[in-house]
Image (cartoon, rainbow, N blue to C red):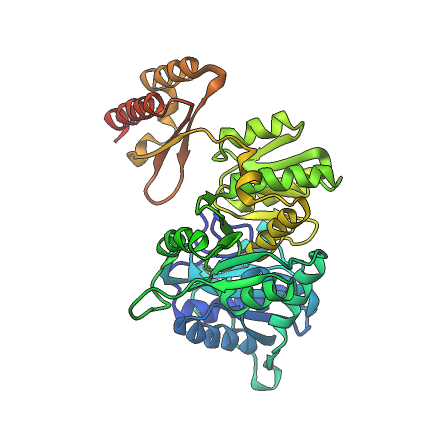
Amino acid sequence: MSRLFGTDSAKGAVIADLSCEIAMQAGRAAAAVLSGGQEKRSKIIIAKDGRLSSDILEAAICAGICSAGADAEGIGTVPAPAAAMLTKKRDADACIMIAAAGTDANSSGIRIFSPEGKRFSADTEAEMERLVFGIGAGSVLARPSAEMGRMLRYDGAEDDYIGYISELIPTCLSGMKVALSCSGSCTSVTAERLFIELGAEVMILPEPEGQFDSDIEMASTNLERLMEFVPANGCDCGFDFDNEGFGCLAVDETGKLTDGDSMLAIFAKAYKEMAKLRGNSIVVNYMSGLGLLNFARDNGINVLTSGAGDRYILDRMVEEECSLGGERSGHIIFLDDCPVGDGQLCGARLLEIMKVTGKKLSELAGEMQKLPQIVLNVRIDPRKREIWKNDSVITDLIKESSERLGESGRVIVREAYGADPFIRVVIEGSDFGAINEMAMDIARTIKSRCA
């Protein structure tokens, strides 16, 4: 696996445990590669989340960029989708987003966007990675002082992003009451203003009692609190945004979770009715639930699948010219409007559908019938990678389970790659007890033969 560019993102590079030295060299490498070896001054936008560590890394990255002869333009704390949008608007050669790496708020990472707000090509990524790790800290030399880049500042990023999303939602959301959970998220700088601008009444989920540390991940706790807060305060729905603002999960008026599968079903049906569903298709990954697949089939919508991770969903959407795709995690991509998942756009569009149809979120989400799902991960010996697929004891048990479920369920067994390889067992069906027993049998068999 790539050391610099992870496989879990459609947005760019991810570096866990990012040091100032690597950050500076990443800035230099980006500037050097984007110049194409020519004597041109590139401009790279720098965005960040609100953690103190991001301020420190921003200084290191900007130093690297300027020392390699490019200009570094800081746009402050904004959601990552805003940074992607502004890359093109600000006529920049790239944008580097500094934020918590994945779900670990104590580990920093960066994402690099192309001028179109997308991921760079594999060749460009490989060249950046070679310069950062291949030769060492001196692989990209600093320019003489007369050739160094400038430090620039742009203070209109929040306004630009809010204005852009507002233009995409022409429906006034007056009469809608929404609760927002933004603690520890980049969306805290824009979400309240955005939904008020759209006409909704906004309530912000209060901070938990006690001292809140922005470097401690609170996402799961916030979601649970939001599920209590929404019905207690008479809200039409609530949204919980992830750290960088790429995705959101919704809570309906009764306090029930509405995940990415349910939102995709709502958006797919609405888009088809508005003739906006290009190719009459949506793109999902293999972890999307059978309920979504059945809903799409019943409504005459095609489903295209990709690998796990929204970078693969985006690649498939571009390849098949689709306008809608996403994951159960709440990363929904509206490709005609934004080249990445955008949690605030997702929430605003969901409210718009509720307003136009006059339906409650529970009604809209209830049109898709979910099936119980069991997911188990089994660690395996690295030497057993791929070999387990030829083990007849394992494969015969998987086949037998699939035949027992028939068309009323499904069994998915996939190998996941990483430092600690594991096999993921996913079973769906109407009988929770039965599928739980099947999943445990398969997991135990895999463990006994591959651990």
